[in-house]
Length: 254
Image 1 (tube, rainbow, N blue to C red):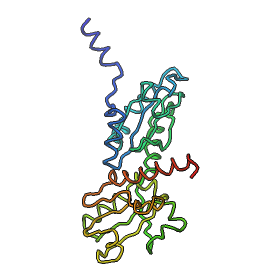
Image 2: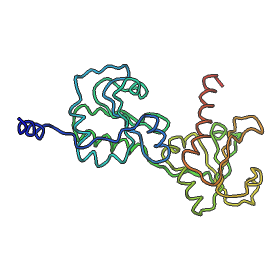
Image 3: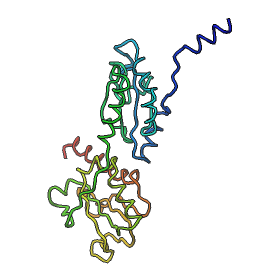
Image 4: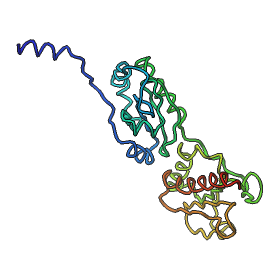
């Protein structure tokens, strides 16, 4: 009997690998400090139901060696519960990979109910291709806040000197999490701390970022300023503040 049990155990399918699952909010928080996306594996829909019986093929694909080798490229969330599935608006058509950025904004949904390893790997590749850093398009001259298109953008005055600390700031501005909203911003680089613009904003050291919202009342246009250690997470604070205001203004018909 003991021998029979051992034989059965040896022949039973065993998942050798599994993603390092974390909670949704923890995954978003960790993503904010890296260049990684959150990969949400949802097997039920946002309404708590599913239109197919099981997702064994997708489960096996997720545990295969080729996919396991790429676990470290994402932060993984298992949305097998209705609450998490609802937060990512998961479809109910079986197993799906939903990739979100640190804001919780979805970059897309990939159905992996069938297709096995190939479908999962394709989803990983396509999601990463949509979340890449982008170079900053610097304004050659200082933006005129009262003219189009600058009066409807967040103007970022970047006081930089090209040294290591400033290079890190440039990387933060190029980060995919920031770059997704480059179209709502205008960037102006300043290297001379003796310039009139540096004196106007009372900037005495580099790197320094000034976040200027032309739509604010006079004297209130600077909504934030950051110096020294500046990361993508720090940049997103004033950017999100500006975008929230834009949304509220649109709702109010301004």
